[in-house]
Image (tube, rainbow, N blue to C red; front, side):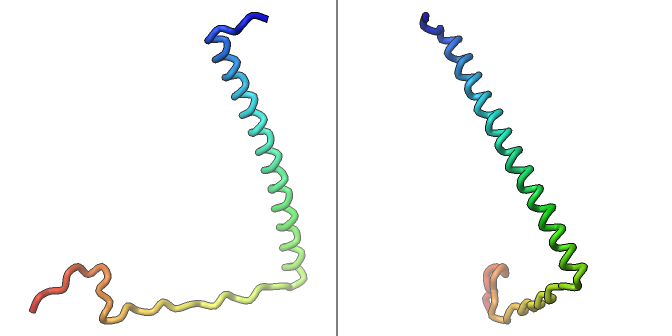
Length: 81
């Protein structure tokens, strides 16, 4: 078989890269489908448990503390007396 020209080698590389990308796209599509099916199953389980009256406790509300008088963050330089 004769050696490939530079353009033919370039074309061969491009075709190989495209084939790899198509294979990756197909694999990612399969992974997305599997995740979608899992999410639908989990949604069904959530609806079943909710139908039985199962609930989660309300999250505790954490109050934010007001900044103290000594907090000078973001206030610039202190004024001279």
